Image 1: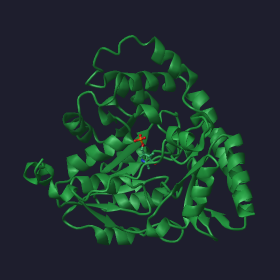
Image 2: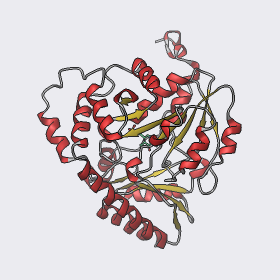
Image 3: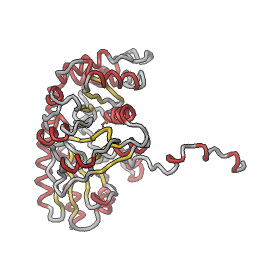
Image 4: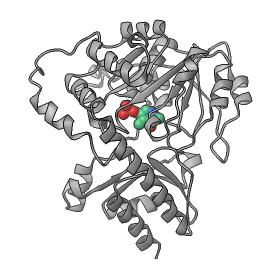
Length: 365
Ligand SMILES: *Cc1c(COP(=O)(O)O)cnc(C)c1O
């Protein structure tokens, strides 16, 4: 076929060099490579919940006979359930195929190409991903050595093109919690402020109560981390009612699938069980952190979520990640300049965390 027939030149030029998201590896692929079953891979690389979903979820998924029907485009039951969980009115709630989809919807709703968002790196890479995908400029206000940021610098970064400030709280991948006072200072800029509370259940601290006084605050949540539903893709947000209404207008009508709705229903009927697992993860986080401190060449940062960011003080973090992978243990490595000597370790079940510690000790010998 001649080059003249190639369709490559028709794609949007600005996306020709778009790199995509460096997602974590699948345990199937790693298991096959190592010759072990995928279930023996110790997966500590994506902040998933290794206790899994509520047992009510798999039972109800099997029993639900309505998969041939499109889910309710109005999200009526879902919003009712989430209203109960958040104690906010249903008209302030919109759900998505993961919190990720809501991040993209907010960028699409607020930002035209050439507009700007303020980002507080190191942070969740999907803010940059969606901004760049939609031709939106990312203005970085970097966090300091303790991963805190200066609200005066954020204020200075605001321009007439600024449309959103993105704050992950607790922050991923650092585990840092931003105080209520700092969130108020960000809100006082008057800019639309997205507070991404993907790890809310691990801290219990939320910006939702601030929404009454600061109508520019929007809060995002997910079922991926605390409820163990990462694979079903379901998240939600609490917004001023007008914004929720606009999000419903621009989202795909069936964005949350039928099985995800079943899973939310069952999870919210089993909150005590799930929060029991959250408490176990928090206790394990503290135990794991205590063990990591004892390893001379590792320095864990304090975390308010279900993972620990750890400095690798000697040797190469990327090589350490590879050495763990050879032992069937997956952890997260970031190529970016600021985090290149770090690993992010998700907190697993006790035996998985023990395996991680044992592997560190063996590698370090
Ligand atoms: C994991 C994570 C998300 C993504 O949540 P999904 O519901 O799985 O899309 C969003 N924000 C932050 C900060 C996260 O760590």
